[in-house]
Image 1 (cartoon, each protein chain N blue to C red):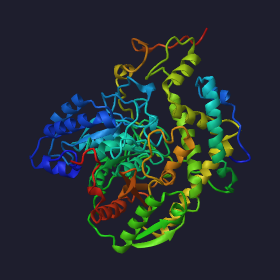
Image 2 (tube, chains in turn green, yellow; image 1 turned 30 degrees about the vertical axis):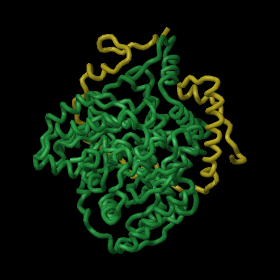
Image 3 (cartoon, each protein chain N blue to C red; image 1 turned 90 degrees about the horizontal axis):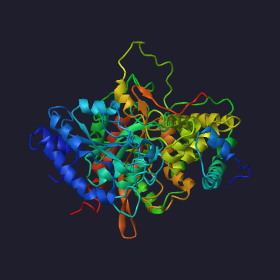
Image 4 (cartoon, chains in turn green, yellow; image 1 turned 60 degrees about the vertical axis):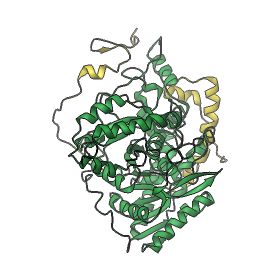
Length: 485
Length: 97
């Protein structure tokens, strides 16, 4: 058993066949993670003792029995810290489990370690973590993407068998693409948001980041369920999402949105995506050109709606009920203002101020209401496109991983790295990124992600296409240099 | 930047957001947010007459659940996270003079 390359499915077979115990598996994982985390910093809290305790109690006869799952630091686990990589939540210990954690534990899995992220999931590089940046396992001078950068880096380097992330504008798919993993942003309402530290509630969704498509479908199948504690949870959320794995793609119609190929993509990345489209066409899919005419407005719409919701959601951090509190407040206003000034990082403050602006008197109609109307047009674009095809093929990111510090000083440039993922959140549908090739930059290989966008609630078809592509191409067998022996 | 560049009153926004900001932050955030708003300007130019706003990706209305009492979290576990407390109470600076 090579722990660095072991998939979730393989680990499940070893456990079910009693070839290994849950605690042996965890100890191997801890040894590997401890050797690499100093360089990569995927985990901001390892909590191995708690993981050992949970591993001893798991029942390996259950569907996910004995499988450790690493958790992004914005998804709460009872008795464990949950900080969303923010200074303002230092010391917070969750008194309850997120629904998704409860569901995974009911299936026999258990939470093992907490993963670094951009503070409150705001960012595309994991440089906005109050605990320090995570590095890309393929090139330690580069960012892993974000905001679920810790999740993707942990899975790519084998420090986690699988991880949970969250995706508000690309925060699962973009890091999965830049680290060479499989990442799924499920349909809005598929996975309960109860216990997810809220960023932008109408866009947030929890999803899995894994080494293979099969692992991803397996995990999401056990995460998807209706939850009365999340008012936007869908009644028909549960389902077997592995059911179409292994089917071929003959007869499927795959749409290529022409606006996604128009400009902005690096030529090497574009070649990988075009090759992937050609491969699927050669294997029997019918490729059709489609149009998503409002694509150019997606980033703008997102940067009105997401900060507006964030400014409201983050009002709860005021130093009264939980989290940190400033010293020697002279009155309540002073307590609020200084607690928030000391506790939030620069990007979070910037988005709170931007969100406050677009919601403020005199600007609400011009920005927020208007953005919600444009959101309708973006949603309609996807409905129209899905009249003509079963799924869409697109790039996940316009470039491969960039260097640490490269975009930090220019927030707008950072925002544009989510240009191909944001519309999926606005439309509320599902999207997955999986490896589709590599580019060479400065003598290093960097992974590129293909995005497969499905109809709402049609994750099974997305997995079918992704699994077929994965099994007929060599990319998922490539390993980053930190674990290539 | 667009020709109809937005000008923001950063101190007013910071007050609304209950956020103390330094002089340096004032300059930085004003420039950055005005730059972002300049980019966002495109959505102000598109015709949205008669278009219904979308609040959620998957529209759901009146998602009621039975009005039945369920146990809450134990007070001591919730209060364990309070930065300052006394017994079952959270301590805050005096509000009423």
